[in-house]
Length: 331
Image (cartoon, rainbow, N blue to C red; front, side, top):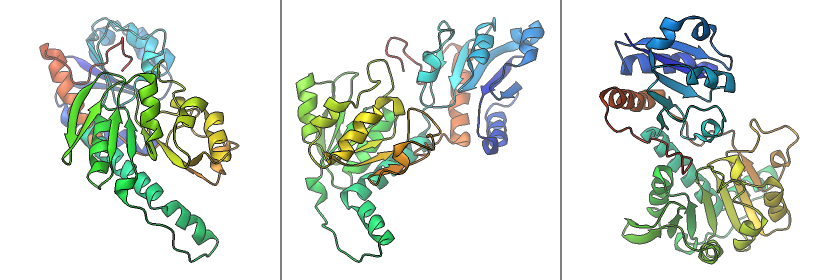
């Protein structure tokens, strides 16, 4: 019988939930669970076990665990339990000859749209300002501008980005979605929008007409440090940034400088260059930064296990995989 191997790190309270969900979605399989960042000794000493493993599920495996994956002779699929795969593809020993699929969980997509809507409403309606007033026991009305006068740009037009764009557009905001992957026409709520990669000056023009920028780009060599001083300066005075993708997209010192000098109004950050965010980082205490502990959208074990089961069946029957990583793009 073939064996499915899960390795990497999971929150302790999620381990049993994931194990149960995977067993229910994939009955009739043998399982090996190695939760933690250490390699599993049995994989080095038991050749018969190594030969039985044909599927590996990974949740941020350590370099030592990756080295063990590369030594599995009949491995045919590596399925990530998380949407981002940059920590995997950047490892020098990653076995690129084995198909890698990322997680695109519909419940996680819904949760990401919910978080983005909360952040946009809080910025546009200045609910963060009311929160500050509460701390000062101030009873003051603030302006209530129209949604149609608050253009929102979603940078990153994959599954998550388009779901976020559609949800925000449904509330009456003018929304544009930008992607580096190519140009195509999409529509939502009766609006037409071009999704694509304009020239650099056109991107600057797009940003110049943006009140709220939402980052949902994949993290690649081309997008690391995307939000530098020049790109933040392309946003208009008083604009805000919401980062729900990866901390590596933002140069922290440049963002803090743009907030300190008053060019940017506020930043809502769910992801950071170092996680957990160090206790001495200025983001914690900056009056116009909202810090979330990487919780904008989590993979649901129940629906995530269903996607895993679908890709396992496709791999074993020679069918195309869902959300297979394209190495030349990095995601």
